[in-house]
Image (cartoon, helix red, strand yellow):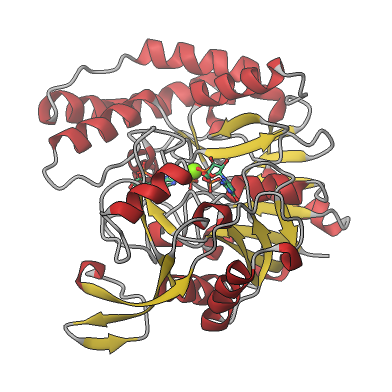
Length: 421
Ligand code: GDP
Ligand code: IMO
Ligand code: MG
């Protein structure tokens, strides 16, 4: 058996964590492969809600090993807060969590620079201000601090000194913000080392060893295809690759290890932050979707922009990721909408195009079709057969237009509200 990868097909918040938790019941290992605390992954078990930012969403299954892969950017204070929170509820985290020694650390100056850049810009990205972009930039500039670096005090000090010089110059001279002091950062990292030392390993080697033993491995994506730095709506994207390439890079597994790639797809579309969104509905129905879907960011609390299903976007995600199937989430939210719009194609300057453009998506004009809605609440439906006729038709319409089967349909936030086909 190979690995399963779960990837968001839109602009994030598709309900990935609910499905990762659902699939985790059959998994030995769940590994996060990219992003950082910009992610907000909600898992609801028996009515109790957990929002994971860094811990993999398989954490609530007591026999599942969770891995933070090398592609993740990790905020030490956030990770400790999350571990403490989950442990309070009686879950053993420390014996089940493995952290890559080559994952990069978000140092407080990364958050400060992220915030300062956003505040100073008149063309904001609308980042989460969690330090994601500055941390990945340092990785590429080769001045980043990695988890493994904190195990050797002298080496860490030398790396930090080198990085801090440039950061303080930038903060002080360009952004007129306070500087950071080496001692404070060293102390914070020394405390972090005490807490996590026993969990730090070479996760690339570990994952290959476990794969060779035939262990079931699930790779957890954060964000989504349209936020991918290469394949998304640049520059309004995140600074990593949530798509399939990122899953390999961020774990060290190779293409031959993967046998299923599932696209997590909301039954409508949302986006949080700035940037183009062709099917956004700024009127009554956008508002209704936000209300019924409780569409507020899990990380920042910002209202999510809402709109209609976008076939061209899903076809783009299918091509880039090689999706085997989709898990269609939040179908229950559409209950009560009399006519449901679906964008089946795009036009630019009046001319039909059959792809998701790699730039200037703001010029796209969606071509809509309307489907009849249904009025019945569907959270209790536990099989496809039991769904209202028009809900089934809606799902089949999306399947026909994309050539992707909805192998799972999610009809509520709880683990139990999941239809397997
Ligand atoms: P993620 O980032 O992709 O893991 O998604 P988030 O956790 O940020 O946002 C998804 C939200 O929708 C969370 O509040 C989930 O509890 C909720 N959710 C997930 N699946 C369903 C569903 O099928 N129906 C409803 N009504 N809510 C869902
Ligand atoms: P999950 O994993 C939705 C968005 C931000 C912003 C852009 C860049 O929960 O789906 P960043 O802080 O990453 O530099 O911000 O990306 N963004 C997300 N939107 N879900 C997420 O994660 C997101 N992570 C980042 O709102 O527009
Ligand atoms: Mg989220």
